[in-house]
Length: 312
Image 1: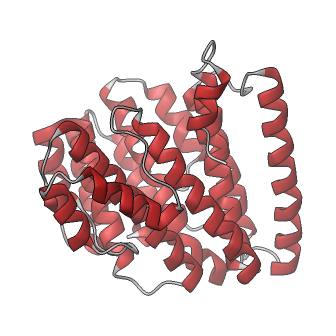
Image 2: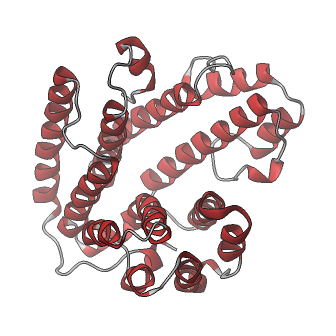
């Protein structure tokens, strides 16, 4: 599905050693920018849109630097980040904010058929239909996205799109480092879904995805049994610490799980010095944007509370 999501950059990229050296330099700059943002208590950009556009610009730069083989290897990761772009563009169509959609797509790596779906369709249902049509040849399902939007709006569309994408990627042949990333990412998604089920007394065992390191059968049993002790055990098994109490913010658990994913990618960057390092940098760019957005919306929030929600 990532091939259908992404456009092909012009050119053949640069030698891998040269790219890795540049990425190491930009990684250091990213760390310096975050330290400066924390010191002044403000992320720099003044809107969520500007933060996400900055992320897209940096990932777009990274993708243009890579040779065709590395682009193909990392395409599922770039595609994952573009899912949010797709949803944000649809939100802009719904709100009839054409200028916002144009700015977003200017930095996006979305393929031309998808870009035309947002720029050429008169309303959200038509754009959803065009998106479903563009992704259909790979996913084999042009109906479920339209049905999800019709039944549950943009949130239902986003949930179905993400599930469809992760199912497709998990069933694909992947580089070992990319496989490890998606396993950890699916773990985050499944455990966050379980946490919400237990907190709000919801049971929907079909919501859990295979492909993570934790067997879906274990997660389903925990959900069906409303077993918070088992949730603690699962979280401790993955990250070495218990889940926060259900009464706490969901973002506290999400931050714990995402920090574990970050640590896993840091290890991969030393084990696989090309794909692992590039994957680690792409994830750091995402985490940087996520943390900036939290900082933007946390003016006046106690520093200790904010610290629990930031991802290391």
